[in-house]
Image 1 (cartoon, rainbow, N blue to C red):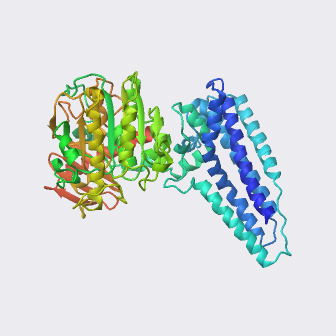
Image 2: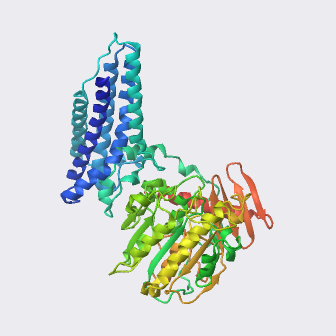
Image 3: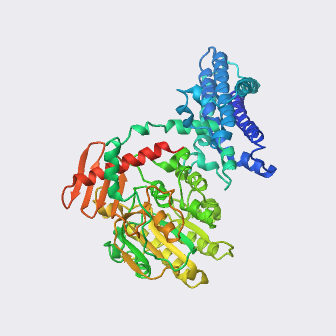
Length: 609
C-alpha cells in the first residue's frame, strides 16, 4: 500500500518541482528586461504555487489510475507509464519554452491565442532567427529528458499477485482517498470559487503576476473556453451596421456637457451594490419602506432615474461599470484574462491622472477571475476576504457581511493621503441566501437583506458627512445588476434591469434628477468628462450629461437582450429567434439597433489581444 501511495505522491511532487524550476527559468530568462529583487522572485514562487498544485493534480490523474488498475490486474503498466511520462514531459517542455520565449514579444502568458498562428507558422516565425529556433528546440529536448529522468526516479510499485482481495481493496480505497485530496488541489480547495488564473495575482506589477501564472494551466483554461466568437451575432453588412448603431450615439463628438461637480479632482468612492435593484427603491418606483436611507440620500444628490444594468451577473456588471464595456448574452469577459487585460478602466484612467486606486470586497476576490481583471486594469491595491480577521470572514455565506466592510472602508478613508483617491467597494449581503444580522418587521427575506445593506450604507454615509473628507468627496452608488423581484419578473421586463445610480458628496454642485435612459456602462465616460480627462479608450461608453446624448439602454441575458429607448421596450430570445416582449407597441428598429450593437461589440471583442 505504502509503495503505491508513495509512487503517486512522488509523481505529483515531481510535477510541482518541475513547475517551480520552470518559474525560476522564466525569471532568469527575463532578468535583463525585468530586473527584480530576491523577495519578488520568492513571492512569485509562493503566490504561483496554487496553480502549480492544481496543474500537477491534473497530470497525476493518469499515474493514479494506472496504480489503481494495477492493484487488480497484471499487465504492461510500466510501458503505459513510460509513454505517458515521455508525452507529458514533451508537451510541458514545449509549453514552458514557448511561454518563456514569447513573453518578451507578447507581454502576456501563453494561452489559446497561440492557436491563431498555428495555421500560418511561417508568418509567426518570420521575425525569429534560425539560431533562436534551434536553441528553442534544443531546450525542449533537454527539458523533456530531464523531466522524464526526474519522474523515473520515483520507484514504481510491482504488482503483487499473491495479495488478498481484502488487501487489494484496502490499497484501492487508499488510492481513491488520495485521488480526492488531489481533486481538492485541482479545484483549489472547498470554497465557492474554483481555481483560476486570478487566484495567483498579487502585485500591481503585471510582470510579477504573469510570472506567477502556470503556463500549462493558462493554456488549458483558455483553450477550454475558446469559442468561435467571430461567428456570433452576424446580422448586417458594414454600412447597415453603422447606420443602425448611430441611433445609440456611440460615435460621440466633443459636445458640451452639463457640469455636476464643483471641483476638478475630488476623491472618488464608487460603491457597487450587489443586486440592489430599483424594485426596492421608492423614488424609482420600487416597494415603499425598504430602503429609507437610500430614499433620503436620493434627495441630497444627483439621482439618475432611468439607469439600466447591462447584464444579470456581478462579473459582467462589474466590467460594464468599471470599463464601460458591453455585456454579452453568453460571454463573461472577466473570466477571460487574455481579453479582460486589454480593457480600459476607471482605475487605469484615474491612476494616470494621479489617483491612488483601491478595490475592497468582503468575499473571495478570486471568484470569476475578478482579481486578475482588477489588477490588470489598473487597481494598485485589491483586497478581499483575507484582508479581514478570521473571526469575521464567515459572517455571511459569501464572506464578510456589509456593515463590517463599510466600517473597514470608513477607517481606510480616514488615513492620511498625498494624492486623490479612487476607491471601489463591492457589497455582498443583498444576495441569496439573504441571511443578514438585521431584522425589520414586515419585510420578507429579500427585502430585509436589501434593508440591511441600505442601513449599512446609511450609517456609513452619515459617518462620512461628519468628517472633513466629505467636502471634497464624490460618492457614486450603483447596483451591479437588478433582480427578479417581485416574483414573476423576467429578463424581458423593464423592472428586471432597472437599477439606481446616485451621486453624492460635497464635490457636487447641487441635488437634481436626471431622467435620461442610460446604462451602467455609461458611467466611465460620464465621470471622466466631468473630470475633463480623456475618454477615447471607451468606445461603448457615453456621456449621459452631454447635449447630444441619445436616451437608450441595452440589457443582455442568456441568449437574448432587452433594448429600451424613448419609444418603448423590445426583448428577444436570440436562440429561438422569438420576440419576448414589445411595449407599448412593436418596433422592428429597436431589435435591429440591439443586434447592430451586439455585432459591433463582438467585433471589438475579437480584435482585443
